[in-house]
Length: 92
Image 1 (cartoon, rainbow, N blue to C red):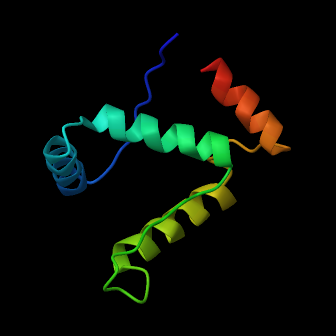
Image 2 (cartoon, rainbow, N blue to C red):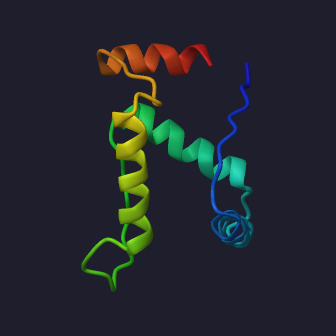
């Protein structure tokens, strides 16, 4: 059973991601599904930095701060364990 996920992102990021995915012969849904499957399987958040960068980008740091604020404000669903998270994702 397929589920639809809606989320907001910067239009420039979306457009660039679609362009890059297209160059790889994929669409944005393919990319996000691949990422989510890996996230669930490995239970890890993987962030790849450009090989020329030694520090996280400003955009990444801003995004992390935004996520922290949302988490601290209780706007994100909390799970007691990884198993609870996986159960929730499997129901979607």
